[in-house]
Length: 518
Image (cartoon, rainbow, N blue to C red):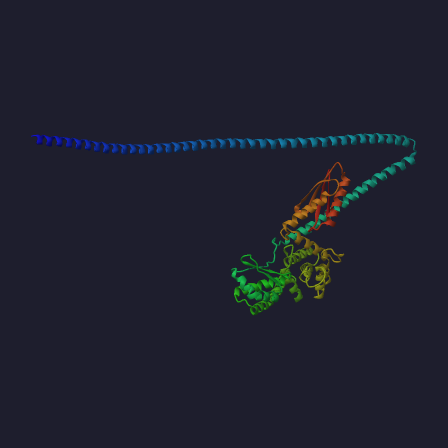
């Protein structure tokens, strides 16, 4: 019994110990689990707090950005308002400046009117004094006449009548002189207009070309050749300079002789087209091209003579005429210019009853000296006269070639007609060109020359430099002084400046005075 009780008691104690141990273990496990849950909850709360903070920061940034954009819009609107206000202020300032300028101008006009009225008042006072003096003289004359006898009165009357008739005769002479001058000018203009109307030439100016197009930049190396032997052979055979630079697609041919330059251009084009470029081939092509050019030049001369209807010229004159095809003057082709002058001279000669065929001959050969002025000494008129005389032309043609620039006294009317036709062909619109710098400089020199005279307020070059309008100071210069000023300016332009044709000088004051610088 006791043993069983002890066994039961020990079992109960052991069970109690085991139960307490198990309870402790359970509580420990539960505590650990609870700690893990707490830590998990704390981590989750931390993450959620971080998310909330980030969203708050993002929202704050978006709000700040939105407010900044709104502020920028307000600033931009304010700037626009300031700019518009600034523009309105500038416009008001401009209007105020214009009004001030208008007021100043009106003040100047008012002062001018006051001066004019003062001068008029002085003039009226002077005239009143003169009238009073004349009345006194008339009274004295009447008193003297009343005491004259019949013969003395007749002599006094005849003397006064003679004085009055002398003034009337002088006025009639001036009137008929002006009528005669107007009639001759009108007739000359009619003849020139008729001749120009009967011949209308092209208004385009020709220029010679000294560039050669190449198919590719590789061709430049073949033109130069190994160590430059091809280009040296070409320059030696043609007598020109060949410029091969970085300009794409072209090679430049340079030379003072237009015929050589054109021959070199054609020969180079043939070599480029053939593709075989070496010294022997270059010499062959250049020699062949020179022969072709000589035939081409003579053919050009024959065609020009046929076009101008001038038969019977010497063959050498055909060569010189053909050379003019490659000569230009102010970008005007000299051969085309010679044909135009031939037509115009022939038409002018027919209008005044002279030989039109001889006029065409003089006009066609008047510039023949330009084809040889690089080979012979002297100006082209003297060279041309020597050439036409050498090849059997008449004295009218020789004199026209020598004197068509008014270098000597004209002995034949054909020289005058050639000079007129030469001026018409050279000065018509589109015939000749000059660079913009030279054109502007010529206008500036013309205006500066006119403004250099005392009494000139302003000067304006118009009509492409063929007329100068001068505004004179009416308070410093009278009508007689304005006429003298016009003549002095025309003389100064003629002596100091270089210009094509003629320059019309017009001085404006109370009256208008016109002179020409020829």
